Length: 173
Image: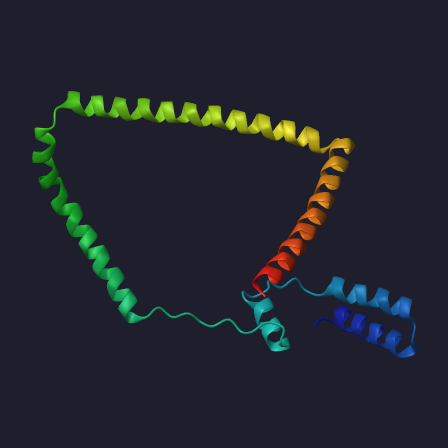
C-alpha cells in the first residue's frame, strides 16, 4: 500500500472512530479513488457468493473418457466418409441427367413459392381479424358488454349446474 493510500485509510478510520459520518464518507471515497485498478480474476463473484452461502458452488464438469473416445471415433468416421464419398457419388451423378435435376429444382422452388403465397394470404387474414378485434376491445362499450356477458353466463352456469345436481340426486337417490 502506498503512503497516500495508507494516510487516506487512517483518516477514514479516524473519522469513523470520532463519529463524523459526512467526513468519513468523503474519506472513504478518497480511499476508493486511490485504490489501484486491478483486474478482477475470473470466477471471483461466484466464489464470493459460494463462500457467503448465497450460491451453491458450481460443480466442475469433467468430460468422461468414454465421451472423448466416442467423439474421436465420430471424427475418424467423418474423415473416412469424406475420403470415400466422392468416388461413390461420381457414378451415381453420371446416371442423372442435368435436365431432370433442373426440372426437379424448379418444381421445388415453384411449390415453395406457392406455399409461401398461401401463408402470406392466411397471415393477412389473421392480422386483419386481430386488428378488428383490438379496435373492438379498446372500446369501453364493448368491454362493458363483454364483462356483463361474462358475469351473466357464469351466474347462469352455476344456477343450472346446481339445478342439475339436485335433480340428479332426487332421481337416483
